[in-house]
Length: 149
Image (tube, rainbow, N blue to C red; front, side, top):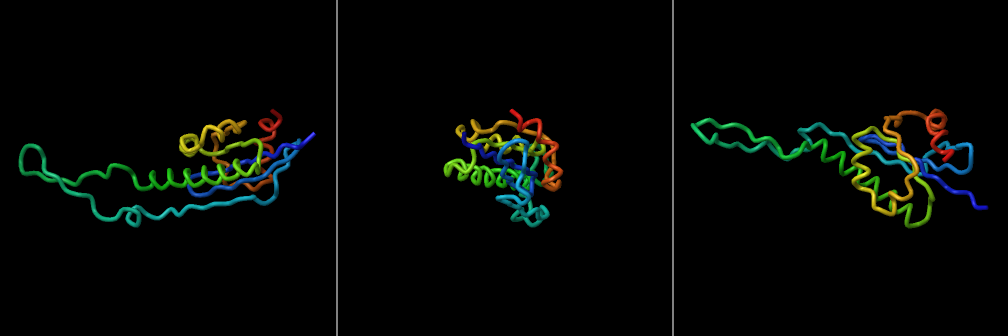
């Protein structure tokens, strides 16, 4: 009987850690097998310049145009895309058999949008909580019931 390998992704908008778990009960590796961080610069450093100006349809009034997307939101989506790429590489090299994703609701949604169909098929559980700052030994109790599946 072969032991299945589960990757546990614990992420938020600026930090992602992937732990490896084998066997039951849940035994997370004490150090992540992968770790990623994203910069979180202020908006003035992300946006290239000031917003454009436009005229009102009636009269001489002018006002600034709102940017089409929030620069911080865009950076969070880019980070989710990078995480999905890491997970996809792990899937194609058969580094894991099952995947658990732990992330705040917005990041969880961004990750869902980025996962390929074969990768989604390996997801056994999702936890919509921000547990990204917990050390590995404190994560295990939150995930033990999910891993018993």
